[in-house]
Image (cartoon, rainbow, N blue to C red; front, side, top):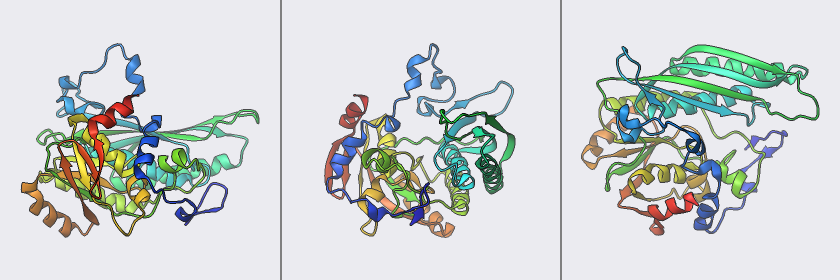
Length: 347
């Protein structure tokens, strides 16, 4: 149990476990935060063609080349305002860890981070608390991941009582690819590939889209997180990519495991057949957004080498299931086909 923004203890036991997972899935489909389509693409006059960089598989990755420099680069931007007023250090560490995981899942090595803190009320004593906590969070995460902090600024606003603008931290991260290694992508590659999760399951739904959108509970703790575990995952995923033992990698992000799997399957109209953990609540397993988990796709021919590597790493991991031709199955129950899911996403 953890404290929420008002200092009350939040527990997953306060939330009833749903009986109909299918109903939860289709309810969350209308959540715009989980839509796989980038709304802003509708306003782009000259969309960047990913084929000009590497291949169509890199769409949305922020991958680009610079004339005269060796190898492509990657850039990603993330923002957070939840819990910044109560635990700015941890919130900032989570934000940077998310960006690092995204970089890793494309095979890029993160090299620098910029952090900008906005909407801090100069007249509020809590403003200094947020600034100091966020500063420590940036420094801790930068040290853990070997990042150079290229810039950090705070914007102090003169906010009056009639305007409520939550403090927000925005970070931008730059990464570089090894020119001799292929770019890794989140999408599933082939039917029959095995799916593993690097990381550990926990009974945690705090600050998830599931908790806030489906249950309409907007005050909870930050999701489960440990910077030291994120640091371990950083090294292991890089090693797996260097050894050519994984064909895809995707961070467990918004919407939890289920929607992360769905986003990985949509590009190739591939589905997944998975088994949940009997020791973890099914809603937490499928929709919880605990940090420190990455979904990887492994060619069956590489499975033994993958297992040997993971066992030697001492990092928790587990077999989730396998990639299907298009059907989505959970615990031997069919939930339809991924192309129908995509139609629901689109409207």
